[in-house]
Image 1 (spheres, helix red, strand yellow):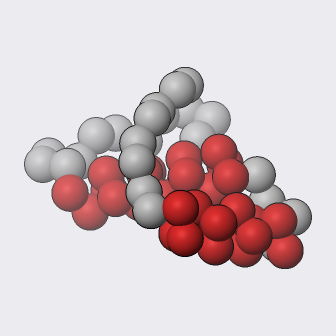
Image 2 (cartoon, rainbow, N blue to C red):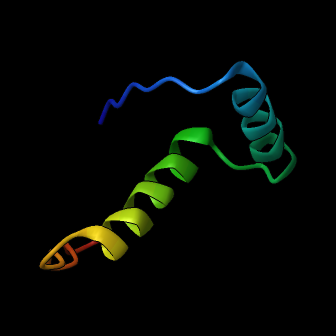
Length: 52
């Protein structure tokens, strides 16, 4: 998967630092956040895929 977006540098730096402090990959966290947003905003909600 590849998604590109723009955020202010200050937000990107905070996000990167917080992910590093938690030992998390930025891409994994972004994927989780997108999934959460979709669950709240899709109409009707998509069936959860196997293995996710």
